[in-house]
Image (cartoon, rainbow over all chains, first blue to last red; front, side, top):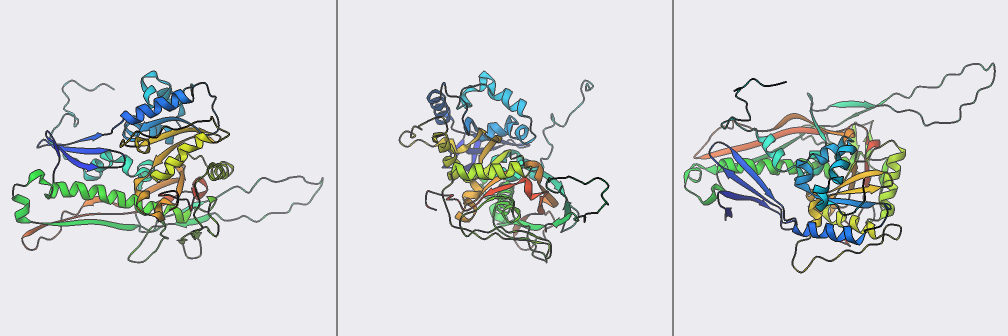
Length: 107
Length: 331
């Protein structure tokens, strides 16, 4: 069975995480699209931010939960591997990325 | 440097062919966390070898006045090696099926090629994360990560390290121990061993269940007290599909859920601590389509094949917490 979303065709779906990969052929090129449901994650992150508000950094503080595709496409994984902590921390401290932070506090 | 106006760049072209392994790497880096993290290189033999050398541990160094010199022996560097492994995916589609109008073209060649490309990459990840020792000969096999690591290790009772055997030139599979729950003590133990041995763990690859256990460490008595809301009825627990960034006592680490490790208890029982500088994957033959498969009969055959090996630059830069309950609280 083929599941379609307009011209897009479902390539892969992960029931555990809800991640789905879609593919579209336009004759010359193959286009890919990955959908992640993040509503729950944003809410969970907001919940942890609120619950830990005012706490200091302890041992093993989860600072952020970032959707996997975003972590790769924003080069966070690569920057972290290469030891470019300044880049990663700047990204995490950026107010635009607050949705992925699960602990307040400047890194 | 500036580009001269009207230079036609490959990024503007629409008809350029995309190479299979590139396409596959781009769409699914998160499917194969360890393989995606590490550097990819080339090798030119089926048995690439390398050496590791180390400093003697520091000690007291006090000499008497006028003392005659004595000379210590030099320990030769260790010579290590791994064998390449051939991985293959294949399919055959009848010529009629290739041309009939079919909903979604799921059974067509191009689609199969993409699908098998994704699958073979996951097989590479599987081979890195499983517990197979290296083997030479015609059916070669590379020693998995698990078989190399013997320094920064936490194993269950009766578990024993494998490691590289310089006599045979092969790695030895570790002995599995009694399974136990993943705890902060195990985590800190491996992190500390790594720190003392000069490792710089940046990433941890675990089964999705172990990653969910990780989150509960925040509720540890020594850490900020914390309770998690149970996800509301029927909603997905999206927390497993994330890279979590932790500030820990030994630096910051990123925790990756590895779905390939969730395939079986054998793979799920290990948590790998990775310094990406200490690991690379060498391709003797990159994953590619064999375009010269002889056509016989009224069908179209396809083969994707690759041959490569895992290079563990120095196992002291890597760590493992083995024998964990990796799929559930009791398995």
